[in-house]
Length: 358
Length: 272
Ligand code: HEM
Image (cartoon, rainbow over all chains, first blue to last red; front, side, top):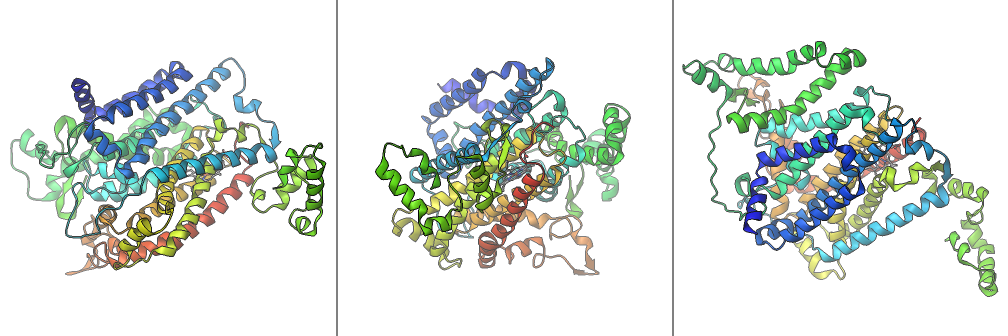
């Protein structure tokens, strides 16, 4: 038992957790034909159920999972995994039909049916079921109410509402101006830009993976891994001082983690060149600024000639550059995570003088 | 309901007679303009003559009515929105958005109102709606339904997604307990760091006339959000008004646009 719990605690470490999440997405994409069977999907749900049941015998686990506002996130874990698997399974079904020259299932169901009764009754049933679930849920789980608001007593941890915890998790890697303002803004812009950037005419109105490999993989990475999995991480695995705590670990306020993060400027001037940091910020941050210029300015142009040549030609310059910029901004998060974990890198650019840290 | 006609067997003449009498009264006929939708003609009429049903088309792709295709997530988001509007309205009877009363009104709701699960339904419904809206977006993406001609409707959706989160965020403050003010404090502190417009954001220092700063704690983006420099009375009122009036109105209008566009773009998507 203890061994198992320790193992789960170990696997839940943000670094391993994130790599596992990416790995799961990779396996889903790579082995999709095998994973498409019902046995896998329902097996996964059964496994999760057993895990939560087993976990709830542990005091620390129970404490964090049954916190009223956390209950929906337990549900979110289930529905997200289920629907990710389900969408993929339906896509595989259609892909296999397309391979042997048959049209997708949706094409065969193209004929029209009467809205009354076919749709109206479905809606009625959905409405009744949804009401029942909501009412039962409301009877058995009280809405939380803590002590009256008190500006003098800051709780530890102070968490944003759960749907913003992915953003709060980003604060580990970025300053608020990026994690709280610019990146969320770009998420909205990026979502809105999707239909105008994606030029692939295929896969419109039916499930498919084969015809939209890149689009779906990127979207799943952004939605399932970066957005939802970080919310789950922020909700269940972040405790006092935003330190990491395994699901079976006691939230110890005094847990201390050594923080020895180093800026790129220090790596460059002090460790590589063996001299002091220049006093002028422009000189000091020159290497970091250069890195960012290369990443956001030069890299897209280079890729347009190399790997992404086909995309560049298909999409045209404007779509390509907007799309790649948004993609690179999204990838800034995993890049920053990796450099943090591997090199303890704090900031790539650190102009504290102007609150401009990347 | 007009559908009950199905359950009437010809063997029960008394009931049939009663039914026939009922559907022949002036009152009934003033409400329902046509017979039960068991014939094709009446199935058309029911959709055309009922304001709620006329959101729907008359006939729809077979794939479009299947759970497999839509997961019913758009519909559930809308249903939850209606539940939230209704329960929210009831909560407004009991709740006053002032520092003096906010918390104690919530305590009162939980202790003195019989059968009080309205607060629960409102809170869990709100959490659920956030999740169903995400899953709806996920489904729309996976079926490629944002592709032409539905680009614009996807955009309407993204804005509604943001509004849903804002509705949830503004509502989170209203109980005025520790959970509420600190979650909103953490969230709204981000606005301090808005580039140029937050007093701790990059570039804000550049907006100054000599020594006079244009952007400071008393006029930056966070101040506009909270109506003060911290989460206090101003913030409570602002969030209340946005939560109960501003944002619901905005999202309701967008929902009308959204449903209209689903119809105008050719109904639920399907292979071309
Ligand atoms: C406030 C939340 C929302 C409500 C109440 C809502 C409601 C609906 C409903 C009832 C449908 C009909 C088909 C279905 O149920 O799937 C629909 C379709 C659609 N929704 Fe939403 N929606 C919401 C948010 C969104 C979001 C966040 C997006 C995308 C980012 C979106 C994009 C679309 C698109 C493109 C369609 C057409 C799909 C098709 O034809 O297959 N909606 N919406």
